[in-house]
Image 1: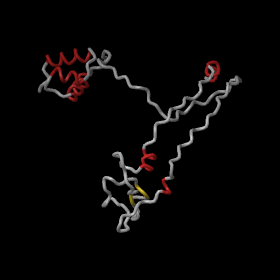
Image 2: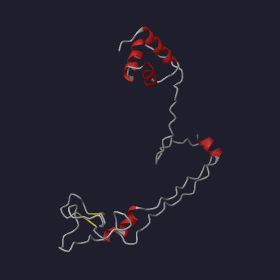
Image 3: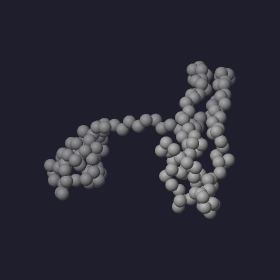
Image 4: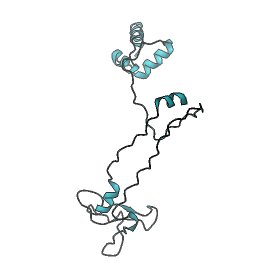
Length: 174
């Protein structure tokens, strides 16, 4: 496909209107998005209208946000009351005390002999020759026995929000 004078004019018009390179390639036909980008670069086109579909990304949430150092202004801010983190729920029987089941021949349940109806909770290090699976009976379509299902499928905890600072203290802290 050659860039004719008409196609270049159409490219310039669509580019100035704020269409994306993909949209322009689709309208012109016979060219790829990269070909449009290359031609725009070679023509030295810049100044565009706002894009036809502005990208609106949600703010990125992080667990720990570093705070800027605060300057001491002499104003005493109300201290936030610390809250203790919620303690993790203990299962009915600790996972460490659940020993893997042995098969009738005395062997542990391994990847070679685990069945659909057996608990597939891993016991030990997979690189260790003594690695095995729990092997107890699983039910309700779960891959785990009742005790290991309690460990694997815990209900979501409600998030706690940090207490808000006093507006005056926040403005003064800066």
